[in-house]
Length: 82
Image 1 (cartoon, rainbow, N blue to C red):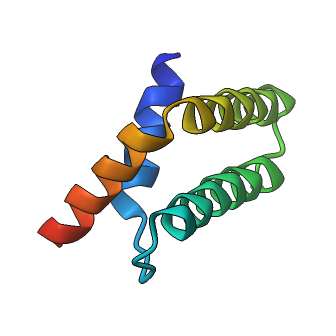
Image 2 (cartoon, rainbow, N blue to C red):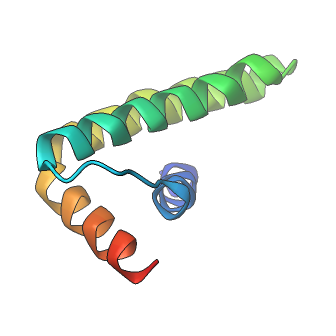
């Protein structure tokens, strides 16, 4: 769970969107999160690391779906500060 939180915070910090509609923002973030982890999975030769990132991706997507409003407010705050 600690790995998920750390990775999630890093992705949230690096995420940038030009959309102003909240539904599009959260959809863009889900895509960004998924493909960022997909690239990590594909780039690692170690089965242990790949499995770790698969678990992070699965749990992260579940967390995003369950906490859309909280994540959306965090994204909006961070984009306003940039």
